[in-house]
Image (cartoon, rainbow, N blue to C red):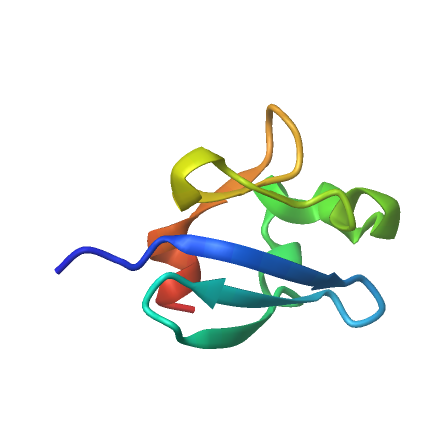
Length: 78
């Protein structure tokens, strides 16, 4: 089964979470605190960077810059 694509996000850098609306109408509040412990995502502890999250074209994930991103599949399964 394919993961639903991301329609929109609302970032809350105060508690490192993100409200994600998927194209199937389901909204999930994703807590990133555990992800920030991983080396790949550790730069996102910088709240200014965390706030720069953008939905990728086509809704296939969320990106912060050219180096840090996460797929819609992983977000759906968090």
